[in-house]
Length: 261
Image (cartoon, rainbow, N blue to C red; front, side, top):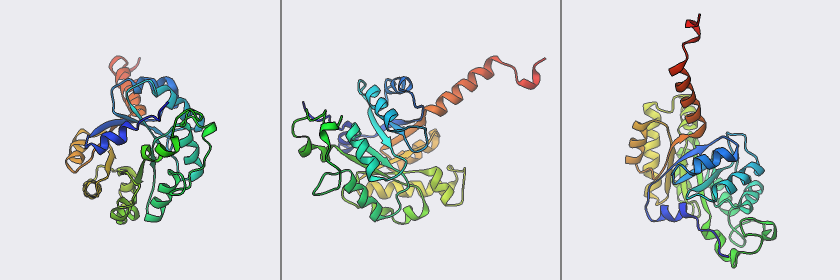
């Protein structure tokens, strides 16, 4: 048995632009629906949605039968949590709110085995190694890991060039919502100053040869960010898709509450 290939990472290395959504419904039934939709990748959002280690594992299992790359966003850059997720089979991680080179370097070490890193060794208990059934897992595991750090503050933006230069950081995801808040535009991720900052950041990331990621539900901004270099393009969130679609359907059949007799 061989180690699973990280298709998201390999496609990015080949220069392919990949599209995906963020997944926030903590039910494996919803995970399968999203996994079969045809996206290149799906982020299981452990930062803002009510996921825990067990539900993330169930979602990885549910998505494994589909041609889609699961990505996990962790709530924080905790090496102990990262260790558990990697052993559960996560190969691509997003770590939020990275602001310094030191933070980025620690995360690189967290996803790699010694002597390069600090990832703990426990493959007999590890789904990633298929419980020691993967031949040569230790020699191959580091190469299949993909680390994406999320820059979403003014401080992080100031250090972006250095963060993106860290060896072992495969990509940088720009978070317009938190970045906008940090810039003084809370709730206004589409403000012209925020959009400009995001575009400049995406160009910087691509110049460093790294994956440049973003998330927006605006068709206009998606086009702008792709023109600026985004090649990990988040185009929606399953929770928002469901919320908007159900509201639209209800409104098409039901009168406004104030109009009811």
